[in-house]
Length: 206
Length: 127
Image (cartoon, rainbow over all chains, first blue to last red; front, side):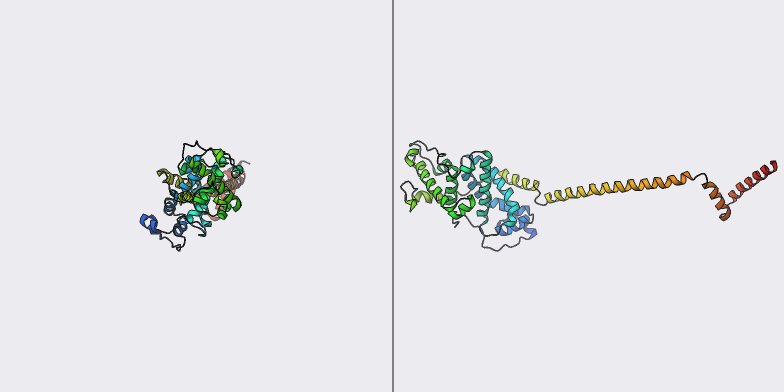
């Protein structure tokens, strides 16, 4: 279940936007995601812009968290996400919220960005216990910094599950891992998070 | 349950994770960057036109090449056709004159013919 993701309007019917309304910002703001997607697929730039303004703030925050220390690349990854998402809009079937679908595209774009940058070797994402350097005991961290300090595999699962509300089955599908692996990664991620937030030394948690 | 480990995050911490800020405002330029990139990729009206014009341009070039070839062939045939009468030009005036003699009663031609007849008659007299 995707409890924390704002499902804008997935239950509403996809009403067509009259062509005359495509340049009317207040009308566009009231349009459902489905109607905007249909108009954008038909080549309506204004509808796409409205979709972009509506969903990019959440997408950007999500991508920045997933990238962690590389969050300065977040806007590039968001751009890449939209460039992948637009041609694929025709395949969107309203089975999940558009925001969830977009985040899954963003996750793949973020993974590709990490692979390209060789910041982390993708194959070791989910076997990596060593990438988290814990701070000295006196340096307590805020929760955002602690997430950023997690190893990539831990960070992704923690963000997807605890922040975004994805289930382990959904995370498994997104990351190409078994749900059990996702559960194990989350357990380890939370353990490291606790150590980071309480400022304990690394050897205390391993 | 596995999650009751002593090192696990507390429920409060997990709840805190779910209440983290969910939005981050992008820079003002990001929207334009994305729209421009999509246009360059051939979306949003202008780009399909670019694609069409590319296809149209190729078709136009092919048509121009065919027209040029056909024009060359036509020109060649015309030149060949005009070469043949030029080679037969020596006999052509006589033919024309003869035709005119039988069909067109042109006074000037008659004058010329009379002169020729006179010349022929003089030659016969010399002989």
